[in-house]
Amino acid sequence: CTLYNCLLTTNWSDHGGGTDASTLNNCTLIGNLADNGGGACDSVLNNCLLTGNVASNYGGGTYYSTLDHCTLTGNAATNVGGGTYEGVLSNCTLTGNAAGFGGGSSSGLLYQCTFISNSASFGGGADRCRLHECMLFGNVADYGGGAFRGILYNCLLTGNSAGGGGGVHQGILYHC
Image (cartoon, rainbow, N blue to C red; front, top):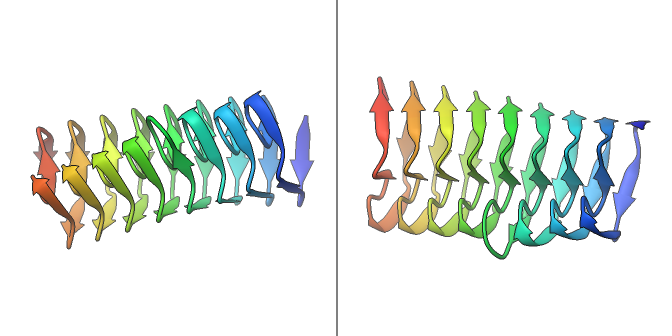
């Protein structure tokens, strides 16, 4: 289905607490719960806000989704991808998300995104992501405050902190 200007709040599902296999435009997803994809699963989101969504496994905000100009704040995943897991994001802001791996994002492809104050044990901002022209500020982790095991192109990392690799741990950086 395709949704416009909708509010999805306090829903639960195995996959996609707020929505699964949908296209959302200018929607808000708040406080949804799922095993995978607390807010959305296998969906396309444009200009959406995802806040306070929780996944017991992967993708507190989204799981296997494509996002453009979205804001993900205060989402959490018990295991991997507090903000998003396995997503493709462009021009998104990820703030205050948390997970074991990849507080902001894990295993994603991200273009011109901003990561602020996300936290994780591994990869406060991002874990195993490919980041293009992204900014990572004030993210925190045990290893890889900004990023862990990722590939970064033309990125800015500042004010991130970790026990090992405040900016990046086990990553590859090009022109950062």
